[in-house]
Amino acid sequence: MRKLASIQKIKEVFPIPDADRLELVQVLGWKCVGGKGEFHVGDLVVYFEIDSFLPVCEEFEFLRKSSYRSNDFMGEGFRLKTMKFRGEISQGLCLGIDKLSKLQGMSLEEGMDVTEILGVREWEMPERAGSGGTMIGDRPGYIPKTDETRIQSAPELLNEFKGLPYYITTKMDGSSHSIGVRDGEISFTGHNFTYKDDGKSAFVEHVKTAGITEKMKTYAEEHGLSSLVLQGEWCGEGIQKNRLRLKKPEWFVFTARADDKRTDLATLKEICRYVGCQMVPVEEEGDDLLAKYPNEAALLARAEGVGYNGTIREGIVIRPVTPVHSYTLSGPLSMKVINNKYLMKNDE
Image 1 (cartoon, helix red, strand yellow):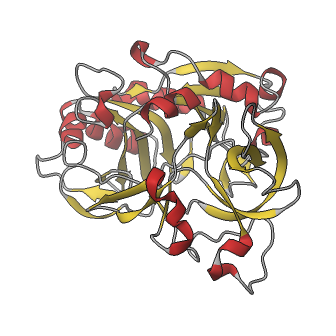
Image 2 (tube, helix red, strand yellow):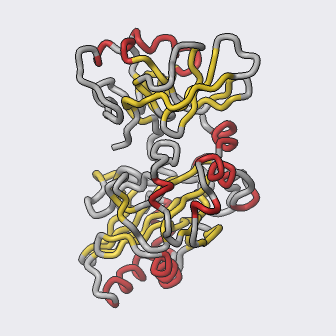
Image 3 (cartoon, rainbow, N blue to C red):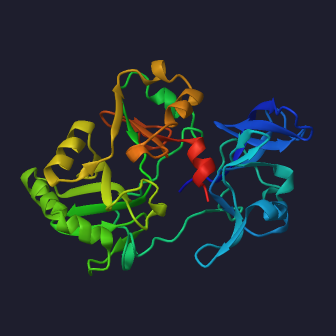
C-alpha cells in the first residue's frame, strides 16, 4: 500500500521570490509550499503526497476552495495534486503534527506511515467498461499491482542503481492491464480487478484477436513455466482522454513475470516478440545511471520533452537490465520519474 501520509523531517526551506507569506519546504524529494516561518529544517511534520484524498473534517477545511472533490466512486474529500504558486511547483502538503488531533499522544518517528490513522485514501477514477469490462473479483495473487514508486518519494532509490546496467522506458499514458497464464488458465485484469471474458472488454477482445493469449500459453508450455504474466498499459480512444492520440487502441507491455519472478530486459523483449505484442519504447540503455543523472533534478529534467507519437511525455521508468532486489521497496528495484510539465497540464 502506498504511503500517502507519513511522518517526515523537513530537509530544506527555500524562499519564494516576491512572496511575503509563503516559502518552499522540502520533504524527501518533494517540495511544497508552506507558510513563512511555519517550518524549520529538522522539524517532524506530517507529509501528504500528491494524489492523497483527505477526508472531510475540520482539520482539512482550509483545503475546500482549492481541493474539494465529490463523485460517486470516491465520495467527498480533498484531493492533493500538483499546483503552482508564484512560479514554484508545489507537490503535496506539510502539516504540523500538533494540528492533527488523531496523532496527539502517539509515539511518532520519522518514516512512520499514518495513512490509515488519518483516513487518507489514494485518489483514483473507476475502471471503466471501455478499457476493462465486467468485473468478477480481485486480481489473482500471482498478478501483482503495477504501481511504481516516484523518485521523490524514495530518493535513496537512485543510489541502489550504483554499478548496475540500466534501461529507461517511456511511461505510457493509459490504463494498467495484465494477462496471466497459470497452469493453462488465463486471467485478464485491470489495475485492481479481474475481468470476465464475455465479449464486453475491449482489452480482452483486442489481445484475443491478436492471438496473444494463446501464444502466451504456448510460450509457457515450451519453457516449462507454471505461470507467465505480461503487464502493460492499455492506451487509445476512451482511455485517459487518449493523450497519446492513437488512431486505434494498443497494449504496451512493460513487465514480464515467469514463475512469479520479473524477467530481465532481454527476456522481456523475447517474450513480446514471440507473442506479438508491443513493448513500451526503450529510450535509453546504459551502465552508470548516477554518472549521467547524479540527482533528482537531473532525472526530472530527463523526464521532460516529447514522448510517444509527438505528445508531451508523461514521464519515464528506470529499471536495472537484470532484476535486483531493492531493500527500500522490499521488491524488484524500479522507479518512475513523472514530468512536472505533464502534471501541470493534465493532473485533473
